[in-house]
Image (cartoon, rainbow, N blue to C red; front, top):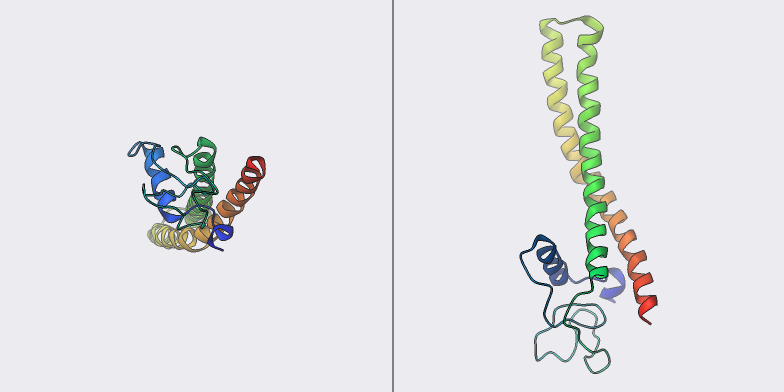
Length: 155
């Protein structure tokens, strides 16, 4: 079932991002089970399948749910930025080594800029591949644990 893999629908994630950015109000008609936005005439949720007869729709997304989304995004960004900046710092240190070891010469300056360029590209690629993958897993794990606690308290 889709909800077990990811509790938030893509539409709900977009809406929560807009609410957090101040571009949309936290008001509407939402599924009482997963908080997916519902049209006025919808009788069941297209995301989790819950019937509005079984679980009454709500008018607001709970701030605890928005906080879960925010924590997920923070973990994802932290992994990406951590790898990017870590790679850049390592590149700067590595780039300065030839100057420290062999003094300032034309080839050490050229080596400095070459290493900086390679480190920049390498850090960006590392952050965009490994950082994205690790950040996504970390964010999903945090979201899954918080969602399970949230749904356990609701029942």
